[in-house]
Image (cartoon, rainbow, N blue to C red; front, side, top):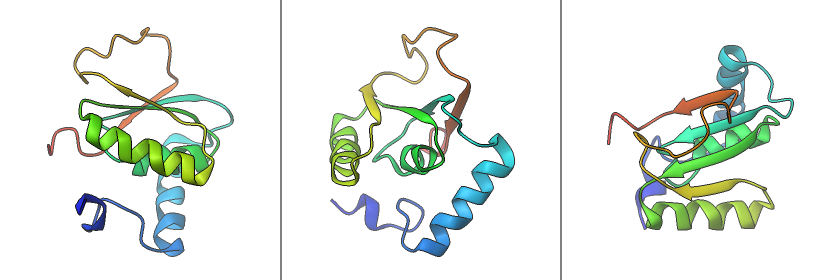
Length: 109
């Protein structure tokens, strides 16, 4: 319930969203339809930022509760993001499936 209310776990202003977009674009470039995997996506904050930038996004997490929140956010925003429950060490995804792989809190958690 309170996970997204903690600093660092949600975007709280358009200024913060713009800063994240600039950071991602600077390091990864524009989405332009490239496939991205968000490992340990949690409630989907980075997944949504990547989607905003034009990436085709898959969010992966091993917590169904977190994924349920991520899916609800996607539905509310009308964002076509695939969220799957898997182990980050054994994703079962084809190795050539993604152009970009990102993670934010994988090591932290």
